[in-house]
Length: 336
Image (cartoon, rainbow, N blue to C red; front, side):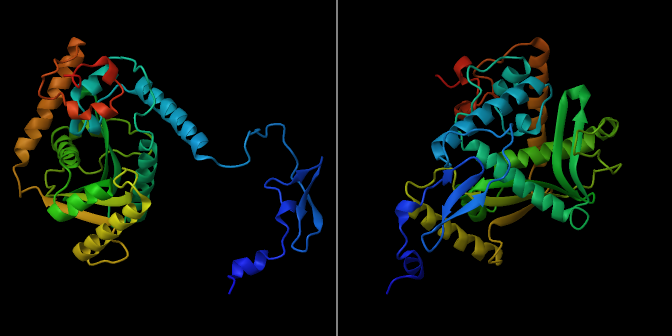
Protein backbone atom coordinates (compact mmCIF):
# COMPACT_ATOMS: atom_id res chain seq x y z
CA UNK A 1 0.00 0.00 0.00
CA UNK A 2 1.30 3.43 -0.91
CA UNK A 3 1.98 5.83 1.92
CA UNK A 4 -0.17 8.90 2.42
CA UNK A 5 2.61 10.99 0.97
CA UNK A 6 2.79 8.78 -2.14
CA UNK A 7 -0.97 9.16 -2.61
CA UNK A 8 -0.73 12.92 -2.38
CA UNK A 9 1.90 13.27 -5.07
CA UNK A 10 0.39 10.70 -7.45
CA UNK A 11 -0.47 12.34 -10.73
CA UNK A 12 1.53 15.46 -10.00
CA UNK A 13 3.62 16.53 -12.96
CA UNK A 14 6.82 17.55 -11.24
CA UNK A 15 8.22 18.97 -14.44
CA UNK A 16 5.92 21.96 -13.93
CA UNK A 17 7.35 22.73 -10.49
CA UNK A 18 10.31 25.07 -10.17
CA UNK A 19 12.18 25.47 -6.90
CA UNK A 20 11.97 29.22 -7.18
CA UNK A 21 8.91 29.75 -9.38
CA UNK A 22 8.66 31.72 -12.65
CA UNK A 23 8.92 35.43 -12.12
CA UNK A 24 7.29 38.30 -13.98
CA UNK A 25 7.44 41.94 -12.95
CA UNK A 26 4.89 41.67 -10.15
CA UNK A 27 3.59 38.08 -10.00
CA UNK A 28 5.00 34.57 -9.52
CA UNK A 29 3.42 31.57 -11.23
CA UNK A 30 2.86 28.52 -9.06
CA UNK A 31 1.32 25.15 -9.91
CA UNK A 32 -1.96 24.20 -8.25
CA UNK A 33 -2.69 20.63 -7.20
CA UNK A 34 -4.86 20.14 -10.32
CA UNK A 35 -2.00 21.12 -12.61
CA UNK A 36 -3.26 24.59 -13.49
CA UNK A 37 -1.25 27.71 -12.78
CA UNK A 38 -2.24 30.56 -10.49
CA UNK A 39 -0.73 33.97 -10.06
CA UNK A 40 0.50 34.95 -6.60
CA UNK A 41 1.13 38.69 -5.96
CA UNK A 42 4.66 39.37 -4.82
CA UNK A 43 5.69 41.54 -1.89
CA UNK A 44 6.91 44.98 -2.98
CA UNK A 45 10.61 44.82 -3.79
CA UNK A 46 12.84 47.09 -1.74
CA UNK A 47 15.92 48.76 -3.09
CA UNK A 48 17.82 47.43 -0.09
CA UNK A 49 16.78 43.81 -0.68
CA UNK A 50 20.01 41.78 -0.76
CA UNK A 51 20.69 39.64 -3.83
CA UNK A 52 21.89 36.11 -3.17
CA UNK A 53 23.39 33.87 -5.79
CA UNK A 54 21.70 30.65 -4.67
CA UNK A 55 18.04 30.03 -3.76
CA UNK A 56 19.07 27.31 -1.29
CA UNK A 57 20.84 27.13 2.04
CA UNK A 58 24.17 25.39 1.51
CA UNK A 59 26.36 24.19 4.36
CA UNK A 60 29.58 25.05 2.54
CA UNK A 61 28.47 28.65 2.07
CA UNK A 62 27.26 28.86 5.66
CA UNK A 63 30.59 27.54 6.90
CA UNK A 64 32.26 30.52 5.25
CA UNK A 65 29.81 32.84 7.04
CA UNK A 66 30.78 31.18 10.33
CA UNK A 67 34.45 31.70 9.52
CA UNK A 68 33.91 35.39 8.75
CA UNK A 69 31.87 35.79 11.94
CA UNK A 70 34.66 34.22 14.03
CA UNK A 71 37.17 36.65 12.47
CA UNK A 72 34.95 39.64 13.28
CA UNK A 73 34.28 38.53 16.85
CA UNK A 74 37.91 37.69 17.58
CA UNK A 75 39.12 41.01 16.20
CA UNK A 76 36.60 42.87 18.34
CA UNK A 77 37.58 40.89 21.42
CA UNK A 78 41.28 41.50 20.84
CA UNK A 79 40.88 45.23 20.28
CA UNK A 80 38.74 45.69 23.41
CA UNK A 81 40.59 43.29 25.69
CA UNK A 82 42.41 45.29 28.34
CA UNK A 83 41.55 43.22 31.40
CA UNK A 84 42.14 39.76 32.81
CA UNK A 85 39.05 37.57 32.56
CA UNK A 86 37.86 34.47 34.36
CA UNK A 87 39.04 32.12 31.62
CA UNK A 88 42.48 33.72 31.70
CA UNK A 89 42.92 32.65 35.31
CA UNK A 90 41.11 29.30 35.28
CA UNK A 91 41.60 27.88 31.78
CA UNK A 92 43.98 29.73 29.49
CA UNK A 93 47.70 29.33 29.03
CA UNK A 94 49.36 32.41 30.49
CA UNK A 95 51.09 33.21 27.21
CA UNK A 96 47.76 33.42 25.38
CA UNK A 97 46.57 36.11 27.80
CA UNK A 98 49.85 38.02 27.56
CA UNK A 99 49.98 37.86 23.77
CA UNK A 100 46.50 39.41 23.69
CA UNK A 101 46.97 42.04 26.41
CA UNK A 102 50.41 43.11 25.16
CA UNK A 103 48.92 43.89 21.76
CA UNK A 104 50.26 41.07 19.59
CA UNK A 105 48.29 40.49 16.38
CA UNK A 106 47.38 36.91 15.36
CA UNK A 107 48.36 35.83 11.86
CA UNK A 108 44.83 34.44 11.48
CA UNK A 109 41.81 35.64 13.47
CA UNK A 110 39.55 32.77 12.39
CA UNK A 111 38.82 30.03 14.91
CA UNK A 112 41.01 26.95 14.40
CA UNK A 113 37.88 24.82 14.82
CA UNK A 114 34.87 26.58 13.28
CA UNK A 115 32.13 24.65 15.19
CA UNK A 116 33.43 26.47 18.28
CA UNK A 117 31.06 29.32 17.37
CA UNK A 118 28.09 26.96 17.44
CA UNK A 119 29.15 25.57 20.79
CA UNK A 120 29.41 29.09 22.22
CA UNK A 121 25.99 30.08 20.86
CA UNK A 122 24.31 26.98 22.27
CA UNK A 123 26.03 27.48 25.61
CA UNK A 124 24.97 31.12 25.82
CA UNK A 125 21.35 30.28 24.98
CA UNK A 126 21.01 27.59 27.68
CA UNK A 127 22.92 29.76 30.15
CA UNK A 128 20.53 32.71 29.62
CA UNK A 129 17.43 30.52 29.79
CA UNK A 130 18.37 29.05 33.17
CA UNK A 131 19.22 32.48 34.58
CA UNK A 132 16.03 34.11 33.28
CA UNK A 133 13.78 31.46 34.83
CA UNK A 134 15.68 31.13 38.10
CA UNK A 135 16.38 34.73 39.11
CA UNK A 136 14.26 35.69 42.11
CA UNK A 137 12.97 32.13 42.53
CA UNK A 138 16.19 30.16 43.02
CA UNK A 139 19.02 32.59 42.31
CA UNK A 140 19.26 35.81 44.32
CA UNK A 141 21.89 37.46 42.10
CA UNK A 142 22.83 36.89 38.45
CA UNK A 143 25.61 38.22 36.22
CA UNK A 144 27.53 39.72 39.13
CA UNK A 145 30.36 41.98 37.93
CA UNK A 146 33.71 41.38 39.58
CA UNK A 147 35.75 44.40 38.55
CA UNK A 148 39.03 45.02 40.37
CA UNK A 149 40.99 47.77 38.56
CA UNK A 150 43.95 47.47 40.93
CA UNK A 151 44.44 43.90 39.61
CA UNK A 152 43.36 44.62 36.03
CA UNK A 153 40.45 42.22 36.53
CA UNK A 154 37.00 42.29 34.94
CA UNK A 155 34.87 39.14 35.28
CA UNK A 156 31.26 38.10 35.78
CA UNK A 157 29.99 35.20 37.81
CA UNK A 158 26.79 33.46 36.77
CA UNK A 159 24.72 33.41 39.95
CA UNK A 160 24.57 33.39 43.74
CA UNK A 161 22.04 31.87 46.11
CA UNK A 162 21.92 34.12 49.17
CA UNK A 163 25.37 34.28 50.78
CA UNK A 164 25.88 30.50 50.79
CA UNK A 165 26.20 29.20 47.22
CA UNK A 166 28.18 30.39 44.22
CA UNK A 167 26.79 29.00 40.95
CA UNK A 168 28.45 28.51 37.58
CA UNK A 169 26.52 27.25 34.54
CA UNK A 170 28.56 25.24 32.04
CA UNK A 171 27.63 23.54 28.80
CA UNK A 172 29.54 20.44 27.78
CA UNK A 173 29.87 17.67 25.22
CA UNK A 174 28.59 14.15 25.73
CA UNK A 175 32.12 12.92 26.44
CA UNK A 176 32.67 15.44 29.24
CA UNK A 177 29.15 14.85 30.56
CA UNK A 178 29.83 11.12 30.89
CA UNK A 179 33.06 11.80 32.80
CA UNK A 180 31.25 14.21 35.14
CA UNK A 181 28.42 11.74 35.81
CA UNK A 182 30.67 8.75 36.43
CA UNK A 183 33.22 10.60 38.58
CA UNK A 184 30.78 12.96 40.32
CA UNK A 185 33.46 15.64 39.94
CA UNK A 186 33.51 18.93 38.01
CA UNK A 187 36.03 19.76 35.32
CA UNK A 188 39.06 21.25 37.08
CA UNK A 189 39.09 24.48 35.07
CA UNK A 190 35.41 25.10 35.89
CA UNK A 191 36.05 24.53 39.58
CA UNK A 192 39.06 26.86 39.47
CA UNK A 193 36.96 29.59 37.90
CA UNK A 194 34.38 29.38 40.69
CA UNK A 195 37.07 29.22 43.40
CA UNK A 196 38.69 32.36 42.04
CA UNK A 197 35.35 34.22 41.96
CA UNK A 198 34.80 33.25 45.60
CA UNK A 199 38.28 34.53 46.48
CA UNK A 200 37.57 37.85 44.77
CA UNK A 201 34.28 38.30 46.65
CA UNK A 202 35.98 37.60 49.95
CA UNK A 203 39.10 39.71 49.36
CA UNK A 204 38.23 42.60 47.00
CA UNK A 205 34.55 43.25 47.67
CA UNK A 206 34.94 46.89 48.72
CA UNK A 207 36.73 47.81 45.50
CA UNK A 208 34.25 45.85 43.35
CA UNK A 209 31.22 47.56 44.86
CA UNK A 210 32.60 50.97 43.79
CA UNK A 211 32.85 50.05 40.10
CA UNK A 212 30.29 50.73 37.39
CA UNK A 213 28.92 47.35 36.26
CA UNK A 214 29.30 46.32 32.63
CA UNK A 215 26.18 46.22 30.46
CA UNK A 216 23.79 43.49 31.59
CA UNK A 217 25.58 42.97 34.89
CA UNK A 218 25.15 44.13 38.48
CA UNK A 219 27.43 45.03 41.37
CA UNK A 220 27.63 42.52 44.23
CA UNK A 221 24.61 43.33 46.38
CA UNK A 222 25.66 41.93 49.76
CA UNK A 223 28.23 43.40 52.11
CA UNK A 224 29.78 40.09 53.08
CA UNK A 225 30.37 36.84 51.18
CA UNK A 226 32.54 35.07 53.73
CA UNK A 227 29.77 32.51 54.31
CA UNK A 228 29.93 30.84 50.86
CA UNK A 229 29.75 27.15 51.76
CA UNK A 230 28.99 25.59 48.40
CA UNK A 231 30.15 25.84 44.83
CA UNK A 232 27.53 24.49 42.48
CA UNK A 233 28.30 23.62 38.88
CA UNK A 234 25.22 23.24 36.67
CA UNK A 235 26.28 21.18 33.66
CA UNK A 236 24.15 21.22 30.51
CA UNK A 237 24.85 18.46 28.00
CA UNK A 238 23.71 19.74 24.62
CA UNK A 239 25.77 18.65 21.67
CA UNK A 240 27.69 16.13 19.65
CA UNK A 241 29.65 18.87 17.89
CA UNK A 242 32.87 17.58 19.40
CA UNK A 243 33.15 14.91 16.71
CA UNK A 244 32.97 12.06 19.21
CA UNK A 245 31.65 9.62 16.59
CA UNK A 246 32.62 8.77 13.04
CA UNK A 247 29.10 8.05 11.79
CA UNK A 248 25.62 9.32 12.59
CA UNK A 249 24.61 5.82 13.73
CA UNK A 250 27.48 5.75 16.21
CA UNK A 251 26.59 9.26 17.40
CA UNK A 252 22.99 8.30 18.12
CA UNK A 253 24.10 5.12 19.89
CA UNK A 254 26.57 7.08 22.02
CA UNK A 255 24.01 9.77 22.87
CA UNK A 256 21.48 7.10 23.85
CA UNK A 257 23.94 5.44 26.23
CA UNK A 258 24.71 8.79 27.90
CA UNK A 259 21.00 9.53 28.27
CA UNK A 260 20.43 6.18 30.00
CA UNK A 261 23.33 6.83 32.37
CA UNK A 262 22.11 10.34 33.15
CA UNK A 263 18.55 9.15 33.82
CA UNK A 264 19.89 6.53 36.22
CA UNK A 265 22.03 9.08 38.06
CA UNK A 266 19.43 11.87 38.27
CA UNK A 267 16.19 9.92 38.45
CA UNK A 268 14.58 12.58 36.23
CA UNK A 269 13.86 11.09 32.83
CA UNK A 270 13.01 14.20 30.80
CA UNK A 271 15.72 16.52 32.17
CA UNK A 272 18.56 14.01 31.99
CA UNK A 273 20.75 16.60 30.21
CA UNK A 274 21.10 18.79 33.33
CA UNK A 275 23.48 17.78 36.12
CA UNK A 276 23.68 20.12 39.15
CA UNK A 277 26.84 19.23 41.03
CA UNK A 278 27.32 20.77 44.49
CA UNK A 279 30.74 20.85 46.14
CA UNK A 280 31.16 21.79 49.77
CA UNK A 281 34.05 24.21 50.27
CA UNK A 282 34.91 22.18 53.37
CA UNK A 283 35.28 18.91 51.46
CA UNK A 284 38.68 19.65 49.90
CA UNK A 285 41.75 21.80 50.40
CA UNK A 286 40.38 24.94 48.78
CA UNK A 287 43.26 27.06 50.05
CA UNK A 288 45.83 25.26 47.91
CA UNK A 289 43.71 25.90 44.81
CA UNK A 290 43.32 29.57 45.77
CA UNK A 291 47.09 29.91 46.18
CA UNK A 292 47.69 28.38 42.75
CA UNK A 293 45.21 30.78 41.08
CA UNK A 294 46.30 33.91 42.96
CA UNK A 295 49.91 33.14 42.13
CA UNK A 296 48.97 32.88 38.44
CA UNK A 297 47.31 36.30 38.68
CA UNK A 298 50.45 37.81 40.22
CA UNK A 299 52.61 36.24 37.52
CA UNK A 300 50.35 37.70 34.83
CA UNK A 301 50.56 41.15 36.42
CA UNK A 302 54.34 40.88 36.69
CA UNK A 303 54.84 40.11 33.01
CA UNK A 304 52.30 42.75 31.98
CA UNK A 305 54.31 45.30 33.95
CA UNK A 306 57.54 44.08 32.31
CA UNK A 307 55.80 43.98 28.89
CA UNK A 308 57.43 40.62 28.33
CA UNK A 309 56.42 37.04 27.60
CA UNK A 310 57.39 34.27 30.06
CA UNK A 311 59.75 31.46 29.07
CA UNK A 312 58.17 28.39 27.49
CA UNK A 313 58.98 26.28 30.55
CA UNK A 314 57.11 28.61 32.91
CA UNK A 315 54.71 26.60 35.13
CA UNK A 316 51.68 28.56 33.86
CA UNK A 317 52.51 28.01 30.18
CA UNK A 318 50.33 25.13 28.98
CA UNK A 319 51.18 23.62 25.61
CA UNK A 320 48.09 21.40 25.70
CA UNK A 321 46.06 24.52 24.80
CA UNK A 322 47.97 25.30 21.60
CA UNK A 323 45.40 23.97 19.11
CA UNK A 324 42.82 26.66 19.88
CA UNK A 325 45.34 29.45 20.49
CA UNK A 326 45.36 32.22 17.89
CA UNK A 327 49.00 33.00 18.65
CA UNK A 328 50.39 29.50 18.13
CA UNK A 329 52.27 30.58 14.97
CA UNK A 330 54.16 33.16 17.03
CA UNK A 331 54.88 30.90 20.00
CA UNK A 332 57.37 28.10 20.48
CA UNK A 333 55.71 26.46 23.47
CA UNK A 334 53.86 23.86 21.39
CA UNK A 335 56.65 23.26 18.87
CA UNK A 336 59.01 21.38 21.13
